[in-house]
Length: 208
Image 1 (cartoon, rainbow, N blue to C red):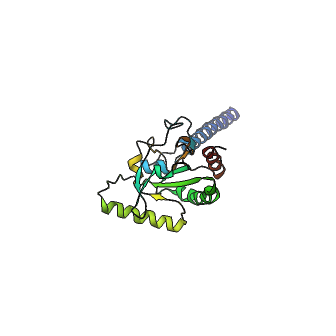
Image 2 (cartoon, rainbow, N blue to C red; image 1 turned 60 degrees about the horizontal axis):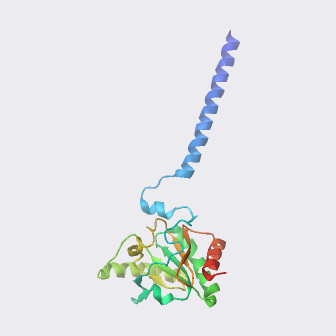
Image 3 (cartoon, rainbow, N blue to C red; image 1 turned 90 degrees about the vertical axis):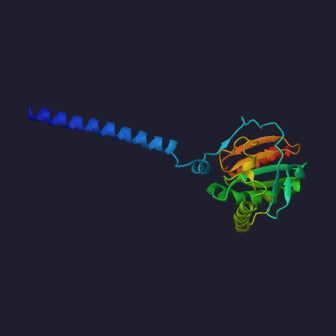
């Protein structure tokens, strides 16, 4: 009788262990997949890389814009007519953007002679009006500091949040739009992409 009680106790203990181990494994996997964020900025910051072929802009002309650069000059998308473009929406608080920026510098150097250009558009989560001189000055200083540190060799424009609606929401940082020489969007990348994938999208923009 005593032996049966011991066997039963051991069996129940093993069952309890396997149930606990299974729950812990499931919970761990769920946390890694769904890990919640405290705010929208963090969610955008850590957004998974995703190439979107279903973007409403695919195959359409990239929406025009007129934004200030770091020198206070107005830069328009039309100024780049005839070039293949990588329009990169980014933010100074975005960790993946810091990793991606040196790749953009390298790609600008590598493909400029083929008629390719990178345009960086700062989207700080604060839509500024043209008359907000103090806000623009503050944002310009932050972007200038970033550009100097990263040795950026392409135009950096301010006020990207004003383009959020036109460019499909900009739900992730960084988000890049690859535009061919006719002005049409040929690829959209949400989140940081591996450099080889960026190269592939640039080839699409160049028509290769």
